Length: 446
Image 1 (tube, rainbow, N blue to C red):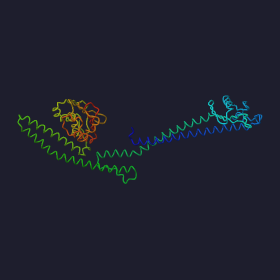
Image 2: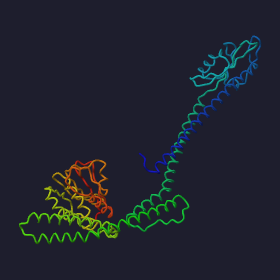
Image 3: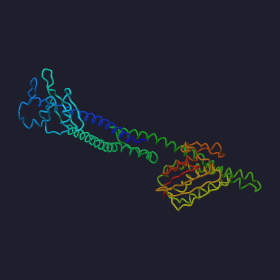
Image 4: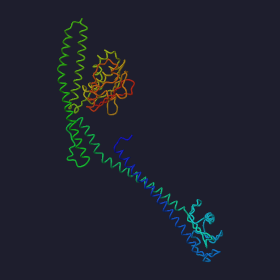
């Protein structure tokens, strides 16, 4: 299926020209064949009429005017018959002479023969409505057929060459015309993510490209305004939540330290409150990092093994609570091109999601794939249906597996992970074709 605009334009242009060339080629060859056929008719008729001029017709006889006609007339392509007797004929192929004799009783007109290919014109010699003889003019059709074939093949070759040349020229012209559009689109997408103040500034529109530039500038203005509002809102929410969550965590830790050792139920409840508060704090930190545009300009470097160890350590309480077996896939020592804190905030929600939905086991591993580092997190849970691979990354959206799970999430972890990953030039994606849950996190290498 064609998706590229330039490909569709190329197909339409070449297709239209191909139809025009095909129609022109058919018309040209039909016209040429008709012209050649008319020429053959004219020559055969002229030869027959020339043969009639060298005979003298009486009531009972047809005779040549000259006893010894010039050699040119003998070879002029005409046979003269008196009754069934050949009076004069050209030095022609015996087979053609037999064909000429075969039509001496035919009415006036043209007759085509196949072997050898020729056209005969029958001209009766009559006197007082009595047919005394026949003049048969002939023209060989071989040269005409060769000319017609050469014209057909030549016109086809010329049409194909024109079509190929036009295709190359059209593709080059379309690439040249649309290249600025592709560049502008790529720049606009990059600016909308990383630089909110860049604009094309092509001036007053005077053609389609400059009009597109102005439209994209206006679009970037709206995108920049929306992203600034979003970042400001995220920062304000994070700021408002950070203080009370820190206080809750501190009060919980203080209460735990003051409880007697026998108060196990109260201690367990306070520890759960403290763990959930830390989890909220991590989410708040992710929001702050996502809202901080300066982070993208100084990505930093971190060790993949250290990041994985930190993520696993942070998820240990959830692993112990669910009794999940975690497998770490061994990998070479590799470096990430982002800060350790940011990498942890990207991977932790994805790992906790896998732990929440798995049945008994989760695996995590990192490897270098081309210029990127690929972290794969898999679980033996129910997995995803085909249309959920992107939907679960929308804020507040959860997969169908959530209906049968005890996990009480609100659908923010995965969207935050993807948002943070894209902010540093990475990506988080889900593989709906896997038997269980499978998430691939691509991060820049250090």
